[in-house]
Image (tube, rainbow, N blue to C red; front, side):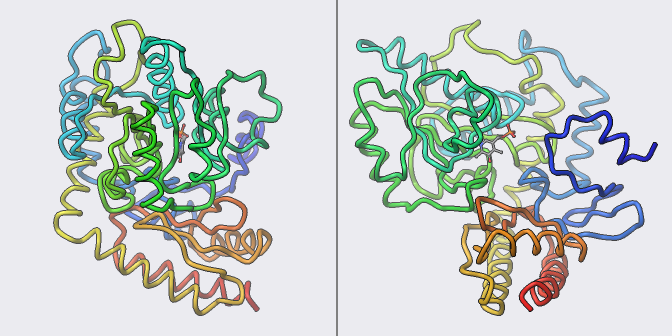
Length: 395
Ligand SMILES: *Cc1c(COP(=O)(O)O)cnc(C)c1O
């Protein structure tokens, strides 16, 4: 049985798989079993933030594995406490953290915090949560219901009550009523198509919600951990959310999610929990990831890479303006709006054949989420290959 047959026989078919068998990665380059190299502009959908096979993260993981991988949240977990301190101090937010295992799970926890706040904080009891159309908050039943894409809700009902979708940020205030407890948004919609919100509008929304005592939840599962240049996109937007959720880039590849909140005493023992959440292994890795990225930021290297990458994307957009509508995004969450979905699919397929991994987002966006440590050389190579691909598809 070939690997492909094994996969098709024994794995549920929930992904549109590419049948390539990657054997090795190094920073933003991966190699398949024939030794062919690919420039990785996806970082495993924003996960491998410090690149593949990062030596420092590998050492942190090995060290933890040889001491304690897992104990349980019934006991102190030193790297977990250190990680929480780093997230709180470096974000500048007066908050506490809870560690989960994924983005969806972090959002579930955020929703539980909001629901408990709405339950204990007085009459009338409030439970409604407003999210945006085209948002993405995860695949568990509640996170899926929070996701404002009706087509994804097919087959899986009934769902928990209390989710309301706003067309855009401007519509949110008019949807708030006496039952509304929270608003949950991404500052830059990722899966929805690399759609940054306007800073001024977010700040106005923040002010409105504060006055109404409605919680502001920012889903930073994709935007967090320096993806936009700051530790959190909330820092970049200069807002003070009540709850922030993190996952993707935080562990450099190990599964970890986090909730940060200023409602420091919302949970009592027993209200929430996770067997694996924040264990030695994943928090040891995440501590190393945060230190590496802080150094990249402080040295100016991160911003240099952003500027270089943005120049390259803009040049590509200009050169192929017959199929590219515009260039969008912030930091290393970038995209090209493509004339139509069919052209986009051809671009992604041809890019793969030509040794570049890129992503689709929304209906017609070619999305780039490279590792934050990508080298100039890797960027050059990736865009040389993409230029050939665009030439072929545009002609
Ligand atoms: C990926 C993503 C999620 C879901 O994260 P999982 O780890 O796949 O559960 C939630 N919110 C946003 C904004 C995401 O990009």
